[in-house]
Image 1 (spheres, helix red, strand yellow):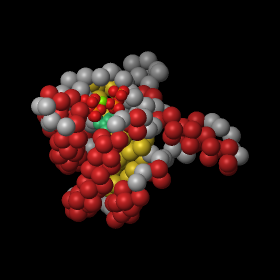
Image 2 (cartoon, rainbow, N blue to C red):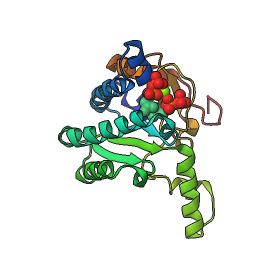
Image 3 (cartoon, rainbow, N blue to C red):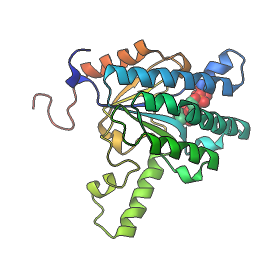
Image 4 (tube, rainbow, N blue to C red):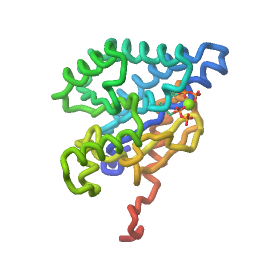
Length: 232
Ligand code: IPE
Ligand code: IPE
Ligand code: MG
């Protein structure tokens, strides 16, 4: 991985398969989410070491509220605890934490933990880590359109881009989905318009550093045309 310029600058990950990982072991689904959180910690620090500038992960979608209450409650407390426990490691590793989603609809203790993480790390210059939580690509576009109406400006692409949850982030170059599913499930619909998609068969708790390098390698072999012709 020597040619830094062909590394994706921004990687998005749809971390899928936690439930299946647990079910395969006859464990409660929340155990899969717990294991998935450990994977995330390793992958984030590894992505930072490899030289990835931005990592955005899908932790909870606007549709995930439809799951049984005990799973939703379990996920909320797991993420709250993780946000509290990991802050020191994030800060020590110069990680800048951001969130994306309708944060104000989350439990208050989680909002406070997230806000603390964002505030504490806001001047860090290392990898930009975005936790997409209560996130939906459609909701994000709706929120941007509401802001356009409120501001009374011309509704062009630039006006929408500037009103996304994190307008300062570059668009993702590479979107990885684990657990074999070939769909976006409402992740980064606007920003991912020209992202390269890589699907891994691995369930998220089983996803390794090698799997990340493999996805990056697949990305490097793609020819990105962005609507033009390959040879310019
Ligand atoms: C992804 O794992 C995590 C969340 C959606 C919160 P799943 O819980 O969707 O795992 P599967 O798809 O049931 O295996
Ligand atoms: C997408 O996974 C959401 C997250 C990974 C947080 P889902 O498991 O919710 O997506 P579907 O239901 O399979 O499309
Ligand atoms: Mg799933």
